[in-house]
Image (cartoon, rainbow, N blue to C red; front, side, top):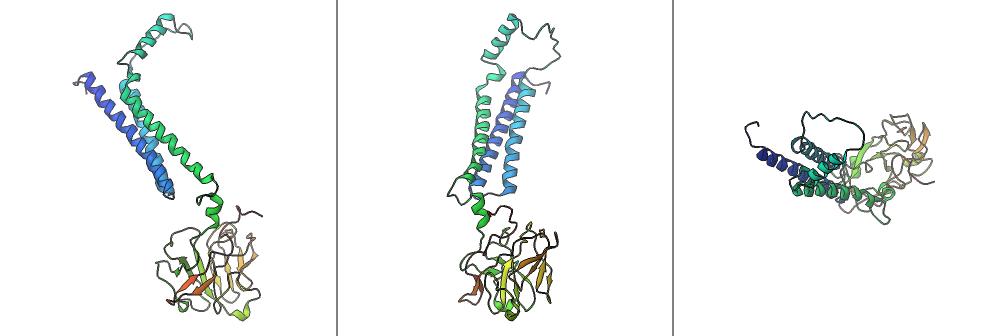
Length: 287
Ligand code: FES
């Protein structure tokens, strides 16, 4: 580096600074686009990390390479600079070749900060009324709905005979196997043992309930065949499937939401609507 002309070093540093700020702007734009397309926590985090890293690198290189540094000693006589010092500082700042007045760098910095500011406004969209991304509405809606087929963990549609008697089968809304609020389980019970009908109804004893515990959202299991109950391993809540999946032990206070189902014209099981109540933890539900 010592063999290069100082102006060449500064130009190289300027290019790196501009590149860093452009990367920062791209990261902020990526965050905004990811959010606008429905959101993905992992990619939003990565984009924000890139945006702030680019900003940090740009500012660091700017300060290290372009702002004069050295073993300067200042005789400090007071907190107010002398008129001479003030005049010198103003002259440096206002000089055409002042390192803090370089137009390209300031423009790139402005672009990065503007993009970051704009990206920060996007989450406010979630608070607007009549918006599908509104938090409470997003929690109430699940991928289940009329004609949504029940599939297993690998996406294979299920027929009624795929649910053997007294066996719990995990089911998911077709096309949404990975969604957090969609998992459910199907079980075939003896209808004459119901002391309370399932909230979502049943098909000759075939019933589907949300898999998420209504206490804090853990998946319920295992299934106690004889008692017709499922247990939540997190805090030991127990739900009586023969009595509408109401909680009979543990901290859960709400029954498991049921899923209304039917057999479609193709012979596969499908939902006729969404869960009978919001699935999972009930901390956000209104009284
Ligand atoms: S999450 Fe099920 S009992 Fe707490």
